[in-house]
Image (tube, rainbow, N blue to C red; front, side, top):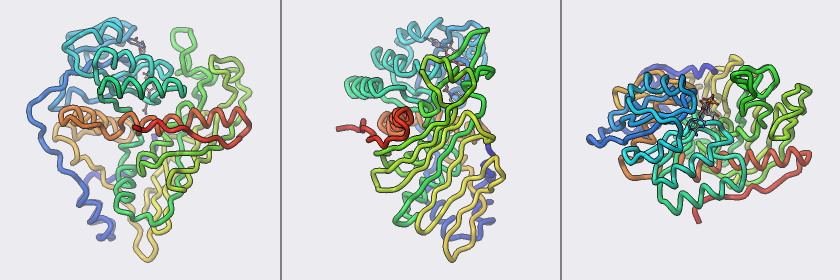
Length: 393
Ligand SMILES: NC(=O)c1ccc[n+]([C@@H]2O[C@H](COP(=O)([O-])OP(=O)(O)OC[C@H]3O[C@@H](n4cnc5c(N)ncnc54)[C@H](O)[C@@H]3O)[C@@H](O)[C@H]2O)c1
């Protein structure tokens, strides 16, 4: 993953930047990591691949009540990581446990909607891996189920808590970009979906990643625009690059594209250029946000350093790490630019405080659905399509 070039302390940022006005105002917007009493959310963790890389056991307000994976080796892994004595053979069994308050769904992308609906049906709150869903029908079902059950939902979008994205969110909230925003958001993971890709095979069989459409995995990119502005991506024109690799000739998605590039218009009349590439010499997730008055470049694998440019002011070259927004035991380095600890804590804090998490179902669908429609646009040769909304009525 790319180097975010974060500094280890906010003090370091302020001292090094020389742009005290900007840094000072950002610092003021930092909420303190308040203790949240002794209530414990009892979570059930499902999916022992990526799902074993979160910090439930470090959150003072969380305990891992149960774990599950269809695979015995992954169940054992989850038990070991989270020191949990209660394994279940499937999510379907785990959700029957009345001692489980909330479920972390880290199963395969095409199963997320089905598994989240199963959790809602049994009265559980849910945090799910990305994407939220893979079709407009699933988006509608999730919205209806969430509103009927009143359960909380959060999508574990790692881009949302990369330090530069936290900073861009603060800059947006303070109106410092000016009266215009153009974002370039991108996710490059060469190899995914290809016939010889390791992640697209397991035990001699094809996995869900085999031939998977890039724009059905849009949220690492769209999360950088929606997650900063809360704007909606309302119209899209998307083009796809057709691969000759056998993975894109014969897959369950009838998907010929290994890389896709979408141009979105937003609800604020702004512009978002969004790439998701499984082919091309690039790596990682990154964004740049260009306003009329201020532009932020995220650091990247390419060598691009993190920098904030403002007319008439010195460049700001360091980004804080924001670890002081976390409870003390969680201030550890974690995956995808330290985002895992933030995602873990935000979900638990929201449940303890009885509020919606930052990336709730509406924000999650606003990051996911535009990709579903972008895929449709690419199938139609780039025709511009309207993106339906799934916000609360
Ligand atoms: N940066 C990120 O946000 C990021 C990074 C990696 C993966 N992911 C997402 O996380 C999810 C998991 O990724 P992965 O690489 O671990 O996938 P994976 O396919 O390796 O693992 C999925 C696991 O879910 C288990 N599972 C499926 N159905 C189940 C059921 N009914 N009950 C219990 N277990 C069940 C499977 O046995 C499997 O071990 C995917 O959706 C992926 O897109 C996100």
